[in-house]
Figure 1 (cartoon, rainbow, N blue to C red):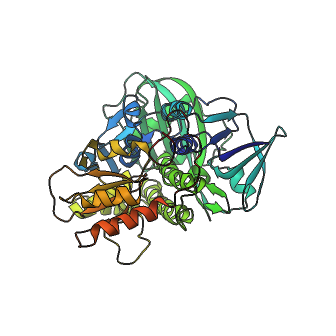
Figure 2 (cartoon, helix red, strand yellow):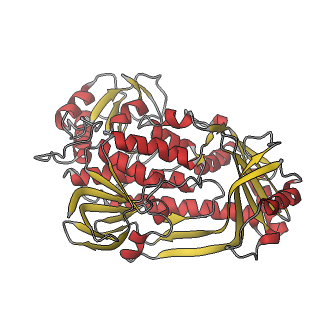
Length: 505
């Protein structure tokens, strides 16, 4: 029997990101993938601002930016443009990059960190008790780990085997997909238009190929198994966009129906679900891969703390508590986009488009919509009453001693940002919680900011406080509570695993 600390099932973006998070924290991790080879077909291609921030916090954003096309304006409804340049982030954009490029960057980091990736491993059975989980594989082998995470997609074997319901429904409208070459590509980086006949989108991959997407009401009753010739896609674009942009070659095509479903639970005992195994929805809005990667970053540090014996009470339950809520919000957002774009009532579509245009006219509502679309507006509820308003919020990338905050988060540690002048907080925390890295804020003073902020490894605020007489002692107590008791031993980290959060140097 092969034993390890955590087994991740599924080597897509979510599973790869989770494996990287675990290995960075010094946790032994094995990644099982049913497919024997990486597919060359791109599904997801939009990387939003919050996902880029989290990748920046692991020194991965630069590699991905070099592969992609930056889009700074989007149209959430006809005649309504959302300019992303005004976002308060280093990444005011949607990055268009093939999913294969994202997986390449993540797999390279996983292997660098020492993650074992096993292909051709199909899970057929799961058993668990109070201490371990055992997986049966189709080839007769058995794998064992303290925890298992199913990142194995919409048809997740892990979800089925632990008996979790995948609640929701399937959309009626077929989606036509094709990868094509164009002789007269559109001038916009991300082209989209629609009329009563349907909606079409054209997305550049940056290598001469484009993803053509069509919701064609004339083709709604054609069975999904019928091949999709280029002539059919050309016809759809001509009727909806007035041009096919010179489609000259097609390397792949498919028909499918998207779904709106969410797992009832993200955790059963020692088994967790993340990514498409936990939630699937309309591709409009480009939320799927982003939500999965963010699931992984949320769960990774919590599982690592549990494996190392440093998890505060309730920490693992907090994964479902935080991410199930986010998943439901994403389903609501994408379902709204789906009804806006593909609804059968022209009157209702026009009314919804008018509402979106009205929302974008006003700063507060525009920021709310932008925050939901880009992920920058995601916040988690505080666990205690009376918590500082910053608790649970996305942490901005502040200037600190030693560099930007998100550069300092690359070790995967908790980081306490001290904005006081005395330095007493830093001294108290360093003594009480050596696992927590302390840094001094060096940027300009701004009203409303806390005096001290404890930042989680996933870039969200664990605890914050304004100035108070007992601030050093309170900060030390909170830092010690979040970092947990010091274990007697720690697992041996991978080649690039963190040496500052419990793993040996």
